[in-house]
Image 1 (cartoon, rainbow, N blue to C red):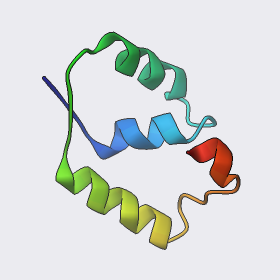
Image 2 (image 1 turned 60 degrees about the vertical axis):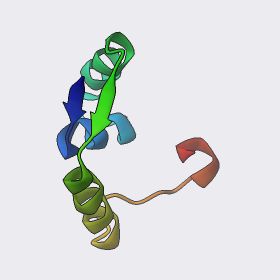
Image 3 (image 1 turned 90 degrees about the vertical axis):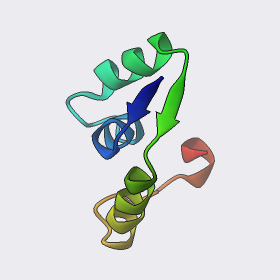
Length: 61
């Protein structure tokens, strides 16, 4: 099982991130994933601070 942290989540979410394609490929290859609860807290803070802005909710989901 692989633990996914915030940096991978951000790279997956933001297609402009320089490691976006690498993150997508990593996720595709891994069969068993676990999400760190701290990653969700950090992601929530990034959204609250508007470091990550969801512009197209349908595409995001």
